[in-house]
Image 1 (spheres, rainbow, N blue to C red):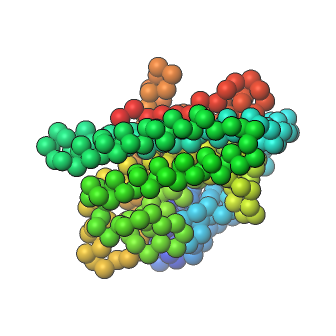
Image 2: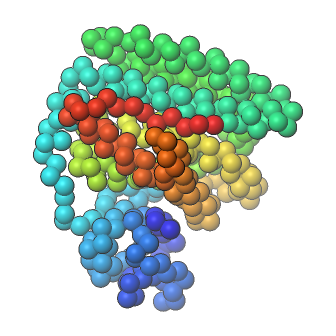
Image 3: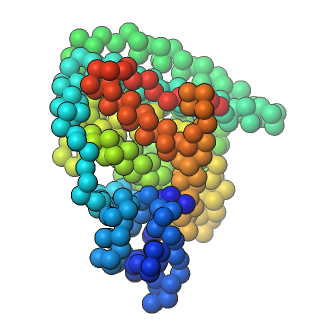
Length: 335
């Protein structure tokens, strides 16, 4: 256990010695050693003690408060901060230069490669079972390749390079989600991708899982001292952590989409019970599964490392890119 999500409405989160405890009706229903935690995500209508806040701050454990969508809107952490002035100045200079186009191209190319990896991952599984859907997934993965290659032709001197790049990303996403729908890898209620406020259970699950992924990216960027609200791809808007949204693009397909596809039976059970939105049990299942992926091992530069640690190392590589020491290379997953 490294990250804990608490979603029980009306519960109280406090401290007992070196343990975090969760209470309902004054009865302890859960406890966890602080030594095993790196962050605690708290949904709405949950109370907590100031003793717990102080204990978490002294140990570097982040407390993240989530809104109704499961998106982190506030964070409590210790007062210690890295010396961030130099890296932030370099970040601002970089995103206002032509170099931001090359970085955005790399991130979106990596996102598309990982979308292809998800399609091929499930294609291999379906082909082994002798199902025609396997070939369909492979064909669509092949159809995406020319769009992926077209990113290299974008001129970074063109004032509209962001619109062009996002246009290609959008066209790939249409192929990608249609493939997942047409091969029945997602529940039958899924017709197209919906964002905020989605009432269909698959989209609601995806949105909730993306919010958890965003909290991982948010923490990694904060650890490195970067400005979360100054991105190189997404347009800066008040309240939008643009840099976090930029970086999480390359992790969406492999970490979240693949996880939600594997949860198809659980989502369909939720539909059968006339449950449009996610209940606390399904939320817990989603958060546990995402946490398991992030704590799982991936091959990184010839060594097996926890994905969460790889994410942090990728963020430090991004810092090096901002200060001109390295060229950022996205993380592609092997299917």
